[in-house]
Image (cartoon, protein in one colour):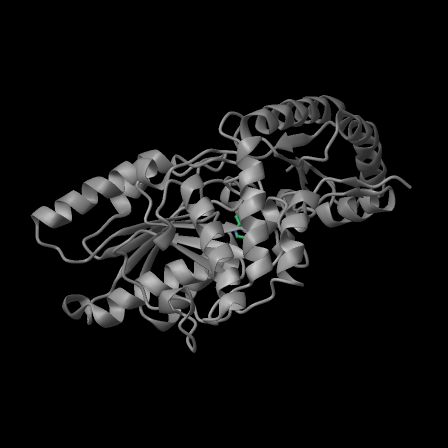
Length: 406
Ligand code: PLP
């Protein structure tokens, strides 16, 4: 049976050019970058080179990049590190209830550390609502900011519905707040963090043009291995390290660096950026064909997410009267691999918080399917899916006990 992989937003295979540059660092060049002899320094030079190349791609200085194990860690470090620093080290604000703003459709690796701060460290949190297509309202951001807001964390683009957020405009609001605080001698910083896990490979961005303070990435969404990520931290941003016990990453993240994976991630990001425009254009065409044909061929189907402000590789639907899990399993039997939402929550039967935040009722939200494309997706794959998916939905609907008009 031919396999059709449609879950590139969950993870991607490692590019062979990426693997090729990694291999020497598992074998001959296996030194520990903290060792001062040649073999260690060979590894040190290689990771510093990788750091510089990644920094260049996002317009940062290499001293502003910290390597982590994944985006979950990067997001945790960004959120907990900056917020707890202000809570415990900023004398003026020690007994104050600090405030965080985020959106209701963030990845759990953003939402959970924020909830943790809310529950255990007495932070106030504003979870911004989103429009029916998943866009944060700028007026809501403006209104939510208080003199005690220490962090705004809004994702660049959503992993389940592909909606791209107005990051530049949100940043402008935050920059104005920074100026206001300066004038008013308010010594609490307000940091802007964005999770660019799904966006970085398709949208060229510059941390200075966008006025970002913190930005998270992970290698396995752009053809590097799983288990390597990075966090951009603007120079001067104060934060408490979350992992202690070693001087690595200038004491900001203890633990021996994952040398081969760091080198692989830098190469993978370079490849992604080199082909960005062409690949985004190609995927956009395939995605639009898929959306058009599925909406035409399958009745009672909704497209979730924004039509215009949408990542090129994500198409997401709701098929009424069926459950997404059954659809995923039935597709699997035919060799089609897709997901109901984000891979990290697909073992839970709760309707996705992203879909329900769009104002979709939980019983309808159950029928969601995310199809995500990548560099090995061909027009033939799309045509095959267009051929099979309507039949599979129809079969499931015949057996389904979910009826009625929602
Ligand atoms: N943020 C977003 C938007 C994601 O899609 C994911 C993974 O699905 C993550 C964070 C977590 O990334 P990692 O698997 O590297 O921890």
